[in-house]
Length: 438
Image (tube, rainbow, N blue to C red; front, side, top):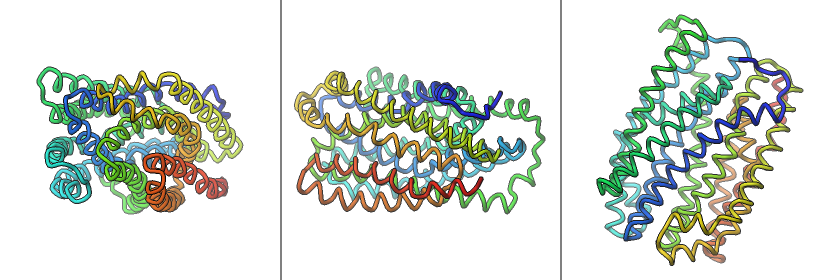
């Protein structure tokens, strides 16, 4: 594959197209699960899956460094032409993913305890939450391994392969969830079981493909003693730990959003869970540019070509922002129809209509911080990412607590918007640190 020295908008867009379709499939799983529960007779099913899904997502996304760290390091090794180290990076991160996944399963009882301690729900809803978590966490090793494989192919700028992996996992997940819920009437158990089975089947196929791909593409012979080199492990740990802390704070911010929603009322918890699906869909669309930018800027850093790096950065921001505007326009036109597809409960529909403004305004503004994330991940500037996220989340907690008291649910959505803006501003302050590495 040719890697152009000057990264145009057309090249970035071409790399992003496969990620667009794959990324749509990811939130689509959440949309389908929400719709499946939203069309059941009682709101407890929707509320329980909403809380449980976000909690499990927070746990798994906390280890998003397995994708992000893999992408940045693979892209930079590609720029240097160090193919053997690419293979070593994958094996190291896969080992870490499996260890972490098994540890999450063993800590299941503590996750259930956190739910009982923090969330003010009915006993029936709480039982359903525990039921979902007990099954869903079994997928942890496989889902974390998917992060690593996705990071590999994004770092290689082979976004089609990464996209096929994510799309297969997501659509198979959707198929199984619909079958288990609508045909077998398994309700909450069905959506959790669908995720577990689809994750392990997907990992099996991509593992076989990747083994033969690395063997043929890079023609490297791996020696076990060189996989776990102390210096490389320390470097990997430092990068991964910074991204871990950053992602932990980010996912906690959305869990905090759900937590404050539950404090307002169970109805607001239900509608905010639905509305967050719109934010997720927009984020995954816009992240396509961020993901493709990760591989591109990491490659340019490896080659030490600052002019091409800055050209890629500029074009990625332009593409992302205008795409955000298009998403907002589509939400403006189809918002009510989409809400009506997700729930049959009229009072939840009408309550959701009141907050259309926030769903429309957030995507283009949030596109900026998403793009900065891609740039910092691709260049492995993980310490700066960590510091910016910690500051932004702490500020978000204080602002949201205050605004909810005076503006109720509108205050919660306003605080989320301010959170996105603060992420962009803080990362912008650190951007010059990247340029010093050229």
